[in-house]
Length: 309
Image (tube, rainbow, N blue to C red; front, top):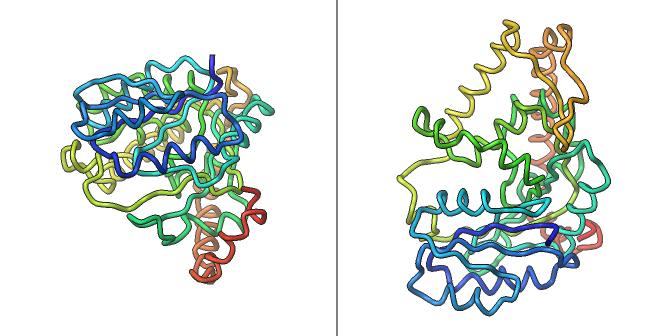
């Protein structure tokens, strides 16, 4: 069985898929499979994937989100990733780096990195979170406090322990009837609430393409990231309140679901102060970002060895 499964939900994106497949073929780590959930594309999407020997295609008439959920719940490999048909992996060594890091540290259940942004023609537009190359991103236990300040991790490049991912979204069907949130955002919330640990790696994992008529735009019900973020923040505030009121106990777990640390009463007491400190660090990140001019970053991107990609 392959070590990593990459889940892709697809629908009529034939013009972009060759870039994605080429980036997969260029990976230094090839012990993976690609699970494609296609919503009966009417263009050459399926034919292109059929010509790629690592792709397994399942036809299912559904939204993009439902396609991802169906695929994720079918994964049997140790690790999983999700990808879109219009984006591609920028770094040829990202899968290898992610796999090695997770294998070497049982405490970690997820690794992630930065990304570049490109336009419809693959022209460079910028780097997502460039300041992370020049600062230390909170990880493992410290990330818990930072999580209340910045709750997003880039879903298109993080590599996750499969059992952890599936566990974190198991109640999505119940949750989505009560509040406006996507399964990916529910995963991010539960991942930290349940005490699993992550680590940021200085890498440029994928290229996110900005284009019209994405599958999400075609299939989702006008739900915006802003709406999801509001729901997410409500979940966070409720969890923080329950911790302070001693209705919840926060346990940190490794990738085998073993408890490796528990927040003490003192740890909970200092959470607000830790959040303030993290807010200050976040502000420092933004100040650093101001000085990372586009042309300077553009030069850095061309120096792949600088980023070890």
